[in-house]
Amino acid sequence: MNIMFVLIPVGLVLLAVAIGAFFWAVRSGQYDDLDSPATRVLTDDDRRPDPDA
Image (cartoon, rainbow, N blue to C red; front, top):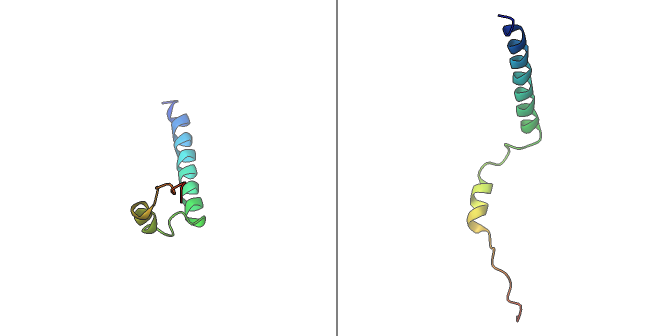
């Protein structure tokens, strides 16, 4: 029963950290553009330029 006095506050602190991280991510713009990173992979050009040209 004494462990409950430790686990409940630890759980609440972890919950507060998770909520804080979520709101930080939303405020910093992490979820603004969800489509272009997926298409950027398809249009990425990893070819090296020809050194003789």
